[in-house]
Image 1 (cartoon, rainbow, N blue to C red):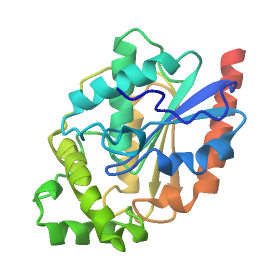
Image 2 (cartoon, rainbow, N blue to C red):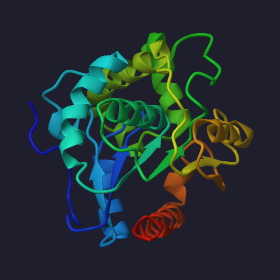
Image 3 (tube, rainbow, N blue to C red):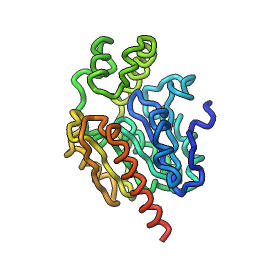
Image 4 (cartoon, rainbow, N blue to C red):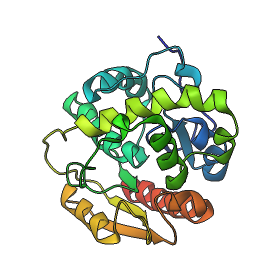
Length: 252
Protein backbone atom coordinates (compact mmCIF):
# COMPACT_ATOMS: atom_id res chain seq x y z
CA UNK A 1 0.00 0.00 0.00
CA UNK A 2 1.35 3.40 -1.00
CA UNK A 3 0.49 6.27 1.34
CA UNK A 4 -0.20 9.81 0.15
CA UNK A 5 0.65 9.34 -3.54
CA UNK A 6 -0.12 12.97 -4.38
CA UNK A 7 1.99 16.09 -4.58
CA UNK A 8 -0.25 18.71 -2.94
CA UNK A 9 0.84 22.33 -3.37
CA UNK A 10 -2.40 24.37 -3.11
CA UNK A 11 -4.66 22.46 -0.69
CA UNK A 12 -7.02 25.45 -0.29
CA UNK A 13 -7.60 25.91 -4.03
CA UNK A 14 -11.25 25.80 -5.14
CA UNK A 15 -10.62 23.03 -7.69
CA UNK A 16 -8.35 19.98 -7.87
CA UNK A 17 -6.76 18.73 -11.07
CA UNK A 18 -5.82 15.06 -11.32
CA UNK A 19 -3.06 14.56 -13.92
CA UNK A 20 -2.61 11.09 -15.43
CA UNK A 21 0.59 10.13 -17.26
CA UNK A 22 1.12 8.43 -20.59
CA UNK A 23 2.59 4.96 -21.18
CA UNK A 24 5.90 4.85 -19.32
CA UNK A 25 5.24 8.26 -17.80
CA UNK A 26 5.46 9.20 -14.15
CA UNK A 27 3.90 11.71 -11.77
CA UNK A 28 7.23 13.54 -11.59
CA UNK A 29 6.65 14.95 -15.08
CA UNK A 30 3.71 16.92 -13.75
CA UNK A 31 5.18 17.63 -10.32
CA UNK A 32 8.14 19.54 -11.77
CA UNK A 33 6.14 22.46 -13.14
CA UNK A 34 2.36 22.07 -12.97
CA UNK A 35 1.68 22.81 -9.26
CA UNK A 36 3.67 26.04 -9.37
CA UNK A 37 2.23 27.13 -12.72
CA UNK A 38 -1.40 26.62 -11.66
CA UNK A 39 -1.16 27.77 -8.03
CA UNK A 40 -2.98 29.14 -6.11
CA UNK A 41 -6.23 28.58 -8.02
CA UNK A 42 -5.72 24.91 -8.87
CA UNK A 43 -4.50 22.12 -6.60
CA UNK A 44 -2.54 19.74 -8.84
CA UNK A 45 -2.58 16.07 -7.87
CA UNK A 46 -0.10 14.17 -10.02
CA UNK A 47 -1.27 10.56 -10.20
CA UNK A 48 1.46 7.94 -9.84
CA UNK A 49 1.03 4.57 -11.51
CA UNK A 50 2.39 1.22 -10.27
CA UNK A 51 6.04 0.49 -10.88
CA UNK A 52 7.35 4.05 -10.79
CA UNK A 53 8.14 6.89 -8.42
CA UNK A 54 6.72 6.45 -4.95
CA UNK A 55 4.80 3.42 -6.23
CA UNK A 56 7.97 1.71 -7.49
CA UNK A 57 7.51 -1.13 -5.02
CA UNK A 58 4.19 -2.05 -6.68
CA UNK A 59 4.56 -4.34 -9.72
CA UNK A 60 3.44 -2.84 -13.07
CA UNK A 61 -0.01 -3.96 -14.18
CA UNK A 62 -1.10 -5.11 -17.61
CA UNK A 63 -4.88 -4.90 -17.34
CA UNK A 64 -7.16 -1.90 -16.91
CA UNK A 65 -9.31 -3.34 -14.15
CA UNK A 66 -6.28 -4.03 -11.99
CA UNK A 67 -5.00 -0.51 -12.56
CA UNK A 68 -8.35 1.03 -11.67
CA UNK A 69 -8.46 -1.08 -8.50
CA UNK A 70 -5.10 0.46 -7.58
CA UNK A 71 -6.06 4.05 -8.40
CA UNK A 72 -9.60 4.52 -7.15
CA UNK A 73 -8.87 4.15 -3.41
CA UNK A 74 -6.12 6.75 -3.82
CA UNK A 75 -8.22 9.25 -5.76
CA UNK A 76 -11.69 9.03 -4.21
CA UNK A 77 -10.74 10.44 -0.76
CA UNK A 78 -9.43 13.60 -2.44
CA UNK A 79 -12.72 14.40 -4.14
CA UNK A 80 -13.93 16.74 -1.42
CA UNK A 81 -14.35 19.70 -3.77
CA UNK A 82 -14.85 20.32 -7.52
CA UNK A 83 -12.25 18.45 -9.54
CA UNK A 84 -10.98 18.19 -13.10
CA UNK A 85 -8.94 15.58 -14.98
CA UNK A 86 -6.03 15.89 -17.42
CA UNK A 87 -4.55 12.90 -19.22
CA UNK A 88 -2.13 12.48 -22.11
CA UNK A 89 -2.23 9.55 -24.54
CA UNK A 90 -2.80 6.44 -22.37
CA UNK A 91 -3.61 8.88 -19.56
CA UNK A 92 -6.53 10.30 -21.55
CA UNK A 93 -8.24 6.90 -21.79
CA UNK A 94 -7.34 6.16 -18.20
CA UNK A 95 -8.84 9.48 -17.10
CA UNK A 96 -12.13 8.63 -18.80
CA UNK A 97 -12.21 5.20 -17.15
CA UNK A 98 -11.39 6.66 -13.73
CA UNK A 99 -14.25 9.15 -14.07
CA UNK A 100 -16.67 6.40 -15.04
CA UNK A 101 -15.61 4.34 -12.03
CA UNK A 102 -15.95 7.31 -9.70
CA UNK A 103 -19.41 8.26 -10.92
CA UNK A 104 -20.55 4.62 -10.80
CA UNK A 105 -19.56 4.69 -7.12
CA UNK A 106 -21.82 7.68 -6.55
CA UNK A 107 -19.16 10.40 -6.61
CA UNK A 108 -19.69 13.57 -8.65
CA UNK A 109 -18.54 14.09 -12.20
CA UNK A 110 -15.53 16.31 -12.80
CA UNK A 111 -16.23 19.93 -13.61
CA UNK A 112 -14.02 19.64 -16.69
CA UNK A 113 -11.94 17.04 -18.57
CA UNK A 114 -8.81 17.70 -20.65
CA UNK A 115 -7.52 14.96 -22.96
CA UNK A 116 -4.26 15.24 -24.86
CA UNK A 117 -2.68 13.24 -27.68
CA UNK A 118 -5.48 10.68 -27.90
CA UNK A 119 -8.24 9.62 -30.20
CA UNK A 120 -11.49 8.46 -28.63
CA UNK A 121 -10.73 5.18 -26.83
CA UNK A 122 -11.41 2.23 -29.08
CA UNK A 123 -11.11 4.19 -32.33
CA UNK A 124 -7.35 4.47 -32.77
CA UNK A 125 -5.98 2.10 -35.43
CA UNK A 126 -4.12 -0.83 -33.94
CA UNK A 127 -0.52 -1.47 -34.83
CA UNK A 128 0.09 -4.46 -37.10
CA UNK A 129 2.49 -5.73 -34.48
CA UNK A 130 1.87 -4.88 -30.80
CA UNK A 131 4.57 -2.61 -29.43
CA UNK A 132 5.08 -4.73 -26.33
CA UNK A 133 6.04 -7.68 -28.55
CA UNK A 134 8.76 -5.89 -30.53
CA UNK A 135 12.35 -7.14 -30.20
CA UNK A 136 14.30 -4.98 -27.77
CA UNK A 137 16.36 -3.14 -30.41
CA UNK A 138 13.23 -2.26 -32.42
CA UNK A 139 11.35 -1.31 -29.26
CA UNK A 140 14.08 1.10 -28.17
CA UNK A 141 14.33 2.60 -31.66
CA UNK A 142 10.58 3.25 -31.58
CA UNK A 143 10.89 4.92 -28.18
CA UNK A 144 13.64 7.18 -29.45
CA UNK A 145 11.71 8.13 -32.60
CA UNK A 146 8.49 8.90 -30.73
CA UNK A 147 10.14 11.55 -28.58
CA UNK A 148 8.36 10.92 -25.30
CA UNK A 149 11.36 9.38 -23.54
CA UNK A 150 13.94 11.89 -22.25
CA UNK A 151 17.26 11.77 -24.08
CA UNK A 152 19.13 11.16 -20.83
CA UNK A 153 17.38 7.78 -20.50
CA UNK A 154 19.10 6.54 -23.65
CA UNK A 155 22.46 7.63 -22.22
CA UNK A 156 21.90 5.51 -19.12
CA UNK A 157 21.76 1.80 -20.03
CA UNK A 158 20.77 0.72 -16.52
CA UNK A 159 17.87 3.17 -16.44
CA UNK A 160 16.71 2.04 -19.87
CA UNK A 161 16.90 -1.60 -18.78
CA UNK A 162 14.66 -0.70 -15.83
CA UNK A 163 12.23 1.34 -17.93
CA UNK A 164 11.77 -1.12 -20.79
CA UNK A 165 9.69 -3.74 -18.89
CA UNK A 166 7.55 -0.98 -17.41
CA UNK A 167 6.85 0.45 -20.85
CA UNK A 168 6.06 -2.97 -22.25
CA UNK A 169 3.53 -3.52 -19.46
CA UNK A 170 1.86 -0.19 -20.23
CA UNK A 171 1.74 -0.92 -23.96
CA UNK A 172 0.29 -4.36 -23.32
CA UNK A 173 -2.43 -2.73 -21.20
CA UNK A 174 -3.18 -0.31 -24.04
CA UNK A 175 -3.26 -3.12 -26.61
CA UNK A 176 -5.77 -5.31 -24.76
CA UNK A 177 -7.82 -2.41 -23.39
CA UNK A 178 -11.42 -2.11 -24.50
CA UNK A 179 -13.42 0.97 -23.46
CA UNK A 180 -16.02 0.60 -20.74
CA UNK A 181 -19.48 1.42 -22.16
CA UNK A 182 -21.02 4.45 -20.55
CA UNK A 183 -23.23 7.47 -21.07
CA UNK A 184 -21.61 10.69 -22.26
CA UNK A 185 -20.25 13.04 -19.63
CA UNK A 186 -22.13 16.21 -18.86
CA UNK A 187 -19.13 18.47 -18.25
CA UNK A 188 -17.03 20.58 -20.64
CA UNK A 189 -14.33 18.61 -22.44
CA UNK A 190 -11.23 19.87 -24.25
CA UNK A 191 -9.15 17.75 -26.64
CA UNK A 192 -5.53 18.89 -27.05
CA UNK A 193 -3.20 17.71 -29.78
CA UNK A 194 -0.36 18.47 -32.15
CA UNK A 195 -0.93 19.40 -35.78
CA UNK A 196 1.84 16.98 -36.80
CA UNK A 197 1.03 14.10 -34.44
CA UNK A 198 1.64 10.91 -36.48
CA UNK A 199 -0.67 8.88 -34.23
CA UNK A 200 -3.62 11.19 -33.58
CA UNK A 201 -4.85 13.55 -36.28
CA UNK A 202 -6.52 16.86 -35.58
CA UNK A 203 -9.70 15.40 -37.08
CA UNK A 204 -9.53 12.46 -34.65
CA UNK A 205 -9.54 14.88 -31.73
CA UNK A 206 -13.00 16.04 -32.80
CA UNK A 207 -14.43 12.61 -31.98
CA UNK A 208 -14.23 13.44 -28.27
CA UNK A 209 -17.20 15.78 -28.75
CA UNK A 210 -19.40 12.67 -28.77
CA UNK A 211 -18.32 11.78 -25.23
CA UNK A 212 -19.92 14.77 -23.57
CA UNK A 213 -23.23 16.61 -23.71
CA UNK A 214 -21.43 19.68 -22.38
CA UNK A 215 -19.34 22.20 -24.30
CA UNK A 216 -16.47 20.81 -26.39
CA UNK A 217 -13.43 22.49 -27.86
CA UNK A 218 -10.02 21.67 -29.30
CA UNK A 219 -6.65 23.20 -28.56
CA UNK A 220 -4.38 22.49 -31.53
CA UNK A 221 -0.67 23.07 -31.00
CA UNK A 222 2.29 23.00 -33.30
CA UNK A 223 4.17 19.72 -33.00
CA UNK A 224 3.92 15.97 -32.71
CA UNK A 225 2.57 13.50 -30.20
CA UNK A 226 4.01 15.37 -27.22
CA UNK A 227 3.12 18.84 -28.48
CA UNK A 228 1.64 19.76 -25.12
CA UNK A 229 5.09 19.39 -23.56
CA UNK A 230 6.51 21.84 -26.09
CA UNK A 231 3.83 24.44 -25.28
CA UNK A 232 3.45 24.07 -21.52
CA UNK A 233 3.03 27.79 -20.86
CA UNK A 234 0.14 27.94 -23.31
CA UNK A 235 -1.41 24.73 -21.94
CA UNK A 236 -1.11 25.93 -18.35
CA UNK A 237 -2.69 29.27 -19.21
CA UNK A 238 -5.53 27.56 -21.06
CA UNK A 239 -6.25 25.13 -18.21
CA UNK A 240 -6.05 27.81 -15.52
CA UNK A 241 -8.42 30.10 -17.43
CA UNK A 242 -10.87 27.30 -18.24
CA UNK A 243 -11.02 26.11 -14.63
CA UNK A 244 -11.33 29.64 -13.29
CA UNK A 245 -14.36 30.23 -15.54
CA UNK A 246 -15.83 26.85 -14.64
CA UNK A 247 -15.57 27.43 -10.91
CA UNK A 248 -17.00 30.92 -11.32
CA UNK A 249 -19.98 29.50 -13.22
CA UNK A 250 -20.56 26.86 -10.51
CA UNK A 251 -20.65 29.57 -7.86
CA UNK A 252 -23.44 31.47 -9.58
